[in-house]
Length: 531
Image (cartoon, rainbow, N blue to C red; front, side):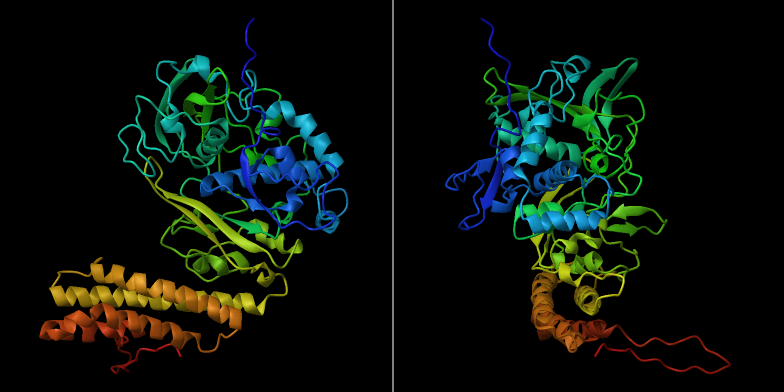
């Protein structure tokens, strides 16, 4: 008798790690006795018990960022919040918040309707995969599981989290593989990939994923239920669910050599921007993934503008681009760009669209920043994962918000003195070492390590105390302390003392500047120190 094909349905199988809220008496669903709280759940139980779950506990930030987008699309579709009508969209969402949980019958009906679309190993339509790759790619030149698992080294890449033996790879479970499937769809690199032949087109290069090297910002509440509702982007009045399709809702697989399907609304925008096509190959039992195909999905690039969880900035050439992930940059330095309608900065940052309405769910929402510092191709640097205290109650609306403006001012001051310190220590180092020009140096690294953590603590303390008046002097003192500590060892020599003393003025805005002469006379301007 032939064995049944492997199956792993994402609605039923436990694959999403979660952290549960403390039990509340009388809050158990009829379907659960309240005692079973597994460490991992499937999508059905995740939605059914979202009000009992504090948060998703995925440890890989880009995988969580990708999964959030899938969950937002499912939540919008299940609740009818994928369309602006009928009635008022915000009012309908608030009604759901007041209800306190997703309706169990609605969850059952919704997951039952989509269950066949979420089988990871379905031979016809495997979830977020293209079964045609088995025939369009060379079966002798697959990517392998080490390439699939983005935290493993593959090829000639250096080890990052672990060493591997490519001759005898450690096969991942489907629960592990699906998370990295999501990372590939959203954060996959550009450049060389497995060759794929579609008709007369044969190519072996791909475009970078829509979130590659970016940092995305997500509102989080006291429960996953709150977080999912707060993270829903408001659809436009012209959005229709019949055309705003997720990949698993399309009747047919798209043509890889044709133009990618148009994004018709938030659901397609959240789930249908991938530039990579993948196919997982399970072992005979379906309990492990033994191989994978990874190649290009489309020859044309899908626009990534409009993602509602990114801070969009403007380049000098006038092009919009998302703020990149930087593992050295603390989240407080982005806070004003999340709260203010027009934050300060030459790049003209625009806050993520979702924050315009997220606080309607709760004013006690935190911000979770998730990203992957990496270049456009193969280089991966570091994950980024940070969370603020509850701050979305300060978001600037039409009438403005005084605290949000003060937050922006604090950020500007903190960065001003950090930048001045950086300039000062580099200039002092150049003078001390007789370097031909000012450049990066060990003093700059040491000063940054001292200043920025102290500046972050100062920022949150002043925000918590609502004490904004003496902030300029506070940040200045932090910069002075870091400068004095880093340069102290050079004061024992004449050259060092001269260089350190001369460069110190950079902490206060630099030397006085002489304006251009007017009418045969000139007036001297002095440096203005923030007070």
